[in-house]
Length: 231
Image 1 (cartoon, rainbow, N blue to C red):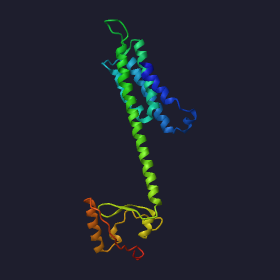
Image 2 (cartoon, rainbow, N blue to C red):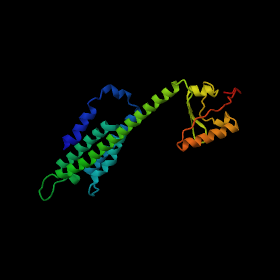
Image 3 (tube, rainbow, N blue to C red):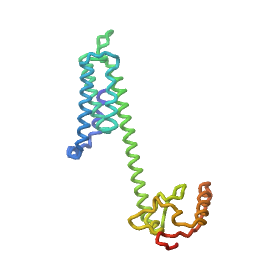
Image 4 (tube, one colour):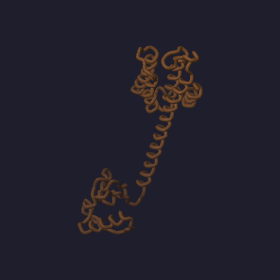
C-alpha cells in the first residue's frame, strides 16, 4: 500500500523536477512551504506524544493535505503524502495512537493503516488532480480569448459590442477610427446616443429588440463623430 499510494505519485510528479527551478521560487512561497512542513511535523508530534485520546485523531491531518493539494499541486501533495505515510507507518511499528495492535491478535493494525492512507491520500490526490485540470482549462480559455482578441483587433472592418443599454463594451481599432475615437482612447464605455440623432436611435433600439427575439436585422445609420463629421 505504501509503495502504490505514497511512493508512485511521488516519483511520477517529481520525475521532471530540476534543481535550478528552486532559484525561481519566491521567498513568500518558501515561507509557505516551510510552514506546511512544520505543520506536518506538529501533527506527527501531536499523535505520537499528546495525552489527548480520541478515536481517529490522526485524521486531523486532512486539512494539511488539502492545503498541500490546492497550493502546491501534485508535487506538494505527493511529498506531503509521503511524510504522512512515514509518520503513520512509524506509529504502526511502535504501536502508537490508533495504529496500535489489535488486542485479539496482538498484531499491528495494518488494516486500519491501509484505510487511513487510502482515505486521506486518495482524497488528496483527487483534489490536486481536479484543481490542476481546472487551472489548465482556465489557462487554455485565457489563451483562446487572447487569440480571439488579437484576431478581432487585426480586422480591417470595425467591430463593436454593445450591452442592452447600447453602451459599448468592446471595439477594435477600426471601430474606434470609424467613430472618431483617438488611438489612445477606446470606444468602450461610450453610448450610441452620443453619436446618433434621436430618430436614428429609436430605429437602432427597435432593431436590437428584433435581434433579442432571434430575428435577423440589418440596418444603416448615420453617426456624428466628436469632431462633427458625419459618416
